[in-house]
Image 1 (tube, rainbow, N blue to C red):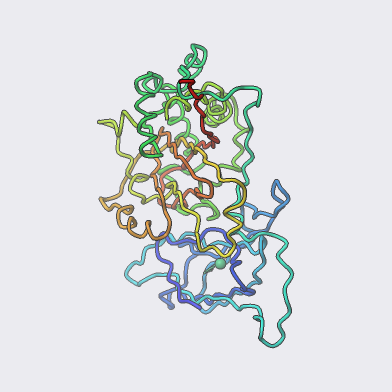
Image 2 (image 1 turned 180 degrees about the horizontal axis):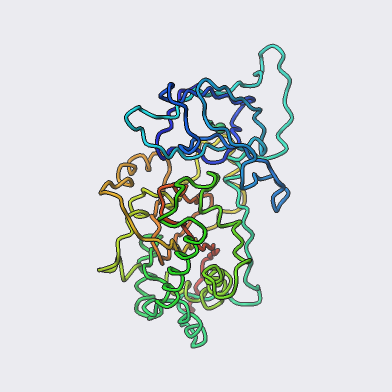
Length: 414
Ligand SMILES: O=C(O)CCC(=O)C(=O)O
Ligand SMILES: [Fe+2]
């Protein structure tokens, strides 16, 4: 049992509470101050999600909750803990403490099933579905493979004219210069991750930035929006985009440009060849570039995080199945907005020490038009931090994963 205080920006992402022998979850709400009724607009509602069968038949929560329960003084809520079914989240609290000390205070805990040795114990059937925690560790994404008939590119293969011409439609020309590519490769070998600023060429980046800002404006998600609370907290605004009908939009729309990065650029043989040759940031944070501090100081969330598998996990098989492989993760972020109203507190810094302890290997703040490349050992988990209600726009990205192999050099006869 614990006493929990949710204040401004606190939230809890969608989960099913399945850990160990938990059977029933309960919460007693005591939002403060008790004489002031908690307003729905202050956020902090408990959200309950229906489930639907996912692509592989495993149930997953619908994106929109079926029920939202704003906290209310002396209200008691309880529900059965069911693997892959009892999905719920806590909406972000968007109200400040104010003079009257507003906070969403609660006492919550779990009733557990009868333990072996206790009276009435019956061995349980194993769960039919994975808990949300287990689902986190298994990838749901389906990847399209390159045809086996095509030889994978090698680091020493120069890029063909055709590849260069294709890539010049998308990439900043700097990244197509052999010298740059060589420097990139060297830095990647040393650091295992690269952040390439101003990655897409100016015409494409401009089109994307403008288009995405206009789209946010139209969708009521721009900096001037009236409601500050994301529509639901299972992933906030970023998640809503997934269902937002990318394909339903017309030609030439920013969505189409985002789509073309995924379907044309990153899946092309040309990009594969470029990756093989380059893999630094010769430009660094270019002088004069507008600081994107809303995203950059962590205030708006949405950063990308890589975490080591937990060695003490009770079910090591979850992380250690199959032969160890290395993967190259790639992510280009296109958050349309770059304004900031936040003061100088660097929220990332104070978490560095904790990071080492909790297995965080790398955290990267998103910035417009940046490509992030990360060499990822098998089992390393990647996730994107919740995008807060304070964000002045949505966070778009296009990501991919490339499997990499070793090149065996031919033995010389000498
Ligand atoms: O406080 C709530 O409404 C729910 C909390 C919860 O889901 C949890 O602590 O697991
Ligand atoms: Fe919970």
